[in-house]
Amino acid sequence: MLIIPAFDEEQRLPDVLRRVASAAPGFEVVVVDDGSRDATAEAARAGGATLIRHPFNLGYGAALQTGYKYARRASADLVVQMDADGQHDPADVPALAAPIEADELDLVIGSRFLGVGDYRMDALRRTGRAVLQALIRAFGLRISDPTSGFQALGRRVLDLYVGDSFPSDYPDVDVLLAAHRHGLRIGERAVDMAKSERDSTLHGGLAPVYYAYKMLLSLWAASSRPRGGATRKGTR
Amino acid sequence: MTPEQRLADLRELFLAAPESTATRVLAVMLSLALVAIVLRLVRRRTLREEYTPIWLLVAVAIALVSTVEPLLDALTRAIGAWTPSSALFFFGQIFLVAICLNYAVRLSQLTLQVKNLTQELAVLRSVVEREEASPR
Image (tube, rainbow over all chains, first blue to last red; front, side, top):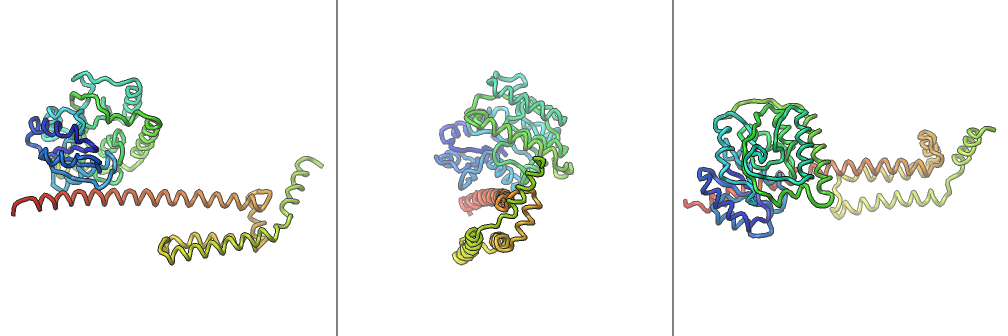
């Protein structure tokens, strides 16, 4: 199953769905329309995707989680999530999905920084990424691209991510840390990524300050919660 | 007389100063008004019954400390304040912070419940729409 959270993406979604259909034909594509004010829902339907509509905007994280809940209801063993703005290349979907299908990993992150493509960050983002990397490294987790939204998830990750501690706004290193602490196997695969406007979490007014504050608080909360049991039941 | 003794005497003067009748009457009227407002809000279904005890307790507390003089005096001395009005402000602020925090917790719970309900609704609607669209 391929989950695409979308908010006001009527312009870019049709092209993304076309590319997905040709690059990852075996996947059921689910678009979670997070209360869009434009014709995102119609674009999703026209593109042949399963449509889940929030009656109002809940946030990027909540839209992803709705997709996870749908996937769980449909007993999906594998979910790949990608953005609706065309930043992620659907051609990378099979490479992300392969380690889950082979039961080598529970969570695969598509990394911009493993030698594929030429994604460049500005100084602010580079600094933010370095700080986040250092923080999660302190907990024994080595990830080159902790803020990547291009990921493949196995059943056990879905079980964890449908819980109430999954954030409604920016699910980043805090949820990775929670997965790590639950004993889930996390790895990365190189992907090509285009620049996106959605990276605005690190731009504009007090948003970067709030983002940094929220991440630190979430990391602390995730690290101080009791570790969950790492049952392997139900994994393919 | 040392400066410390002079300060202690001055504090005793403040503490012994009688609260004006006007202040007491105003405080009692305020507490009665609070009770009346709370009851009116309940009658109009603007305020749920489970939220009323705290505000009725506040009204009783205001009436008590403004009519039973030794009570406020003892509270003032206990927290090291100089005047009964400072003690009232102190306890009032503690109460306001506590109730705001309590409401923030309730708001967080409600936000989570609304999010979960919305997601459930969205998923079920998608399933129903698909079933309705599929040929029987």
